[in-house]
Amino acid sequence: MPIHETNNTVVQAKKLSKTYNSRTNVLDRISFEVRRGETFVVIGPSGVGKTTLLRLIDLLEYPSSGRLSFSGQDTTQLDNYDRLELRRRIGMVFQSTILFNTSVYSNVAYGLKLRDTPEDVEAKSVSRALKTVGLKDLEQRYAKTLSGGEAQRVAIARMLAYEPELILLDEPTANLDPANTSTVEKAMQKAKEAYGATVIVATHNMFQARRLGDRVALLLNGKFVEVANPETIFTNPRESVTRAFIKGELIY
Ligand SMILES: Nc1ncnc2c1ncn2[C@@H]1O[C@H](COP(=O)(O)OP(=O)(O)OP(=O)(O)O)[C@@H](O)[C@H]1O
Ligand SMILES: [Mg+2]
Image: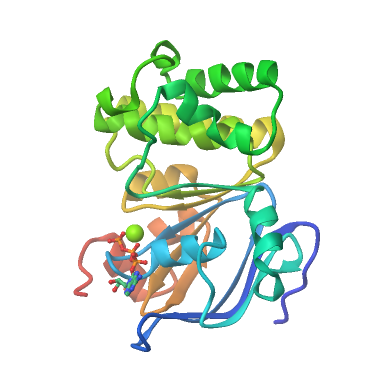
């Protein structure tokens, strides 16, 4: 079936491929779309290409072939300046958090400063973002004194502070305890309710995939082998390989 681009499509990939060092395709001609306001969860074994896919969507890398559109614009046709402009509407939290060696406040304010935000708005946005991840008392702390889980939440606050229309999360709660995982998941929910953010998450946490996903996509051998609602993926998948992966029985 042809894919129609509409205002309701935030990300659209057509025959998107990514190859490193001309070896086998990490991503092999995948086509999919992510709709405005939905949470699209990508699952799949380690090394399958989840981070690669998120980095392509974040416009940090170029596809080897195929087309990738953001909000109706074909990003593969844009020059660096226009890609940078588009990137400002996207927020990514990386698998390994990197904070600047300054205060928590400065870290969270970073994206707002890039966007020339007035100082009073900046201060309010930073406070609000830190509050949503349960860290409002740490504004003045030095980032390097934070625990791993605190640093992860600061990275999430840094992204939430400027309210990106597209949020990309790569294993956002891998370092967090259950209570903080719940705090972060609620923060995502809030961003969706407050301004209609679209969220793409890569996770190894199947409970999280089930809780957060409007749709869940299983990536295997460079392809999405199944994309469906969480209920279908986790209780009644169409593909036997999906069932095997969910049950931890997939030999890979
Ligand atoms: N810059 C690179 N150069 C060469 N190979 C790379 C590069 N980045 C990723 N790869 C390879 O591409 C494949 C996919 O990597 P990717 O990080 O996207 O996997 P992943 O699904 O995110 O894995 P994990 O669940 O462990 O985070 C891996 O085999 C990886 O070694
Ligand atoms: Mg990864």
